[in-house]
Length: 363
Image (cartoon, rainbow, N blue to C red):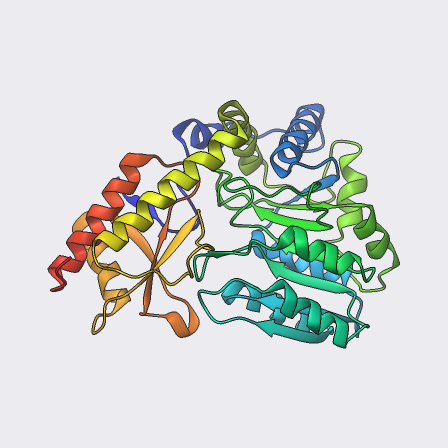
């Protein structure tokens, strides 16, 4: 069995995988309506919100696109805060849909600085919408500023859109307590479910902005999804088999308890970080902002990360992720989110150590 140590798609528990093999049902019938209501309430508990949450049949990027088309008017001034490749994806989406972009980018390994963000907003009073990534899997960094940033944005009657695709369900994201307007997530991460579902929560502030937005949208029209959910349906054919899986995974997650899930992720992430350092390796993330869902490990001088990853697959049946963009070949990303325990982490560390040794690195 392959030890999947990438930041998504993540391993799926056997009972969740089995749930996805259930016979197909009528997606316009009462059985699906009951499941949609049940899973929506479960997702809201994980989101820690009383706001509306809709489930899209899409990847996490679909949720990001939905946020842009529903909440940004063509020609509108917006700010995108990027700490890596997935922050840059928001930049691309804003440009494609005709937004007037201001971007604030931070060096790989750093978290965003709320004071710098506030300075940018002060200099351009037209900016009313801010997009930011909570957990950046390309660099192994978690932004710890969401609550403070929400206050900064709301003080100027703005709206905060948060990509929590790789954090929510694995680390704390207190949607209501932090007053986050729009929060996005995806099934293939800590939700322990196959790829194919994306979640969008919106508060009253966000719904009002979406209603006034002239931007054309169809498949990703969040209002259509909200209206359909009232009758237990989706506006378009849903990914029913993945929904079966979500129903089961939510049962497992809520039985474990959110605090226990967060504690488990922190414990295992700490084990990975300490294990990497014990080998003489360095982390990309700055101290204090390391992600509890994925660790980005710097490749030793003179070595190529892609070759190390290839060795781990061939010799140890372990799959790590490589660097993206400018970090290609320079880092190894060790995923530790979702369905995993201490044995998976130990096996992953052993595979990393063994692969490095075979390539001449002495831990």
